Length: 304
Image (cartoon, rainbow, N blue to C red; front, side, top):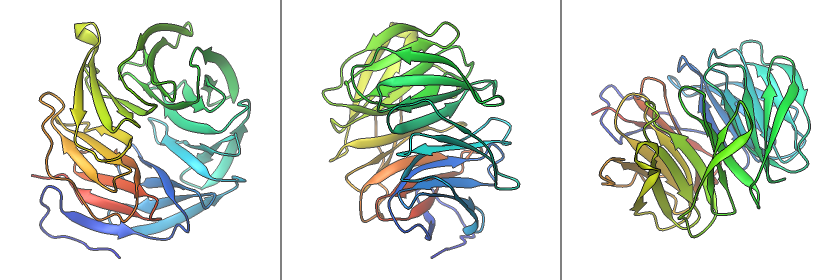
């Protein structure tokens, strides 16, 4: 089902993308906003046109569930990974496989490119983070320190710091140039699923199995604001790139919009029939995408 709305209002449903035959675990918009990539337990990555809802391509090659996708900052590479422990780099223009990265000894749960394009970070169930040169395929450094699986990673906008989320209930901050852990953030009562930095780098959001979100302030000695409202584990968080807005997806089947400064939440966006595993916001900040165990991707308006 796809609906092309002539008038967009905040929180309005723009349509549902169908085609995956199993849970959809992750989403990523291309830097120009013209592509949306989805990762699924059907072992595929799909590329969509978010303006029309059309599926443009299906990328096959993973031997098991695909858990994460990420575009490089120039949009010339798309990384995907999952249960088969490999990271595949694709050319989104040709849909051809560029190279395969191997080295993790457990599922790979998260991916992110550095703003400068020279690094790709991967988070794994083997309790480590690896930093790769995406152009040579070489593993440059392995970051160790978490005591349980690492579920998500995010670079600061300047690329000088990397945050990691782990089932050990901690968020760690790393210096990617040295591989040193510079801070360990504690407060969540259960595993941490995801992390996201605001576009100005002033705030870090973490999503947890404890049903809460925490907003960490590096300028105030990493003090944290706790945000509650979800009735299930919070699987994913994403900051708007253009305004003061935080979005979260949860196992309670809903998507929520928050003011990260006050913690005030708007009414939940409902429509998914099962847990929401991922949220992503388009580069212009106008469109929100959510991925669910109900096998669909939904698009929502953030205008207004």
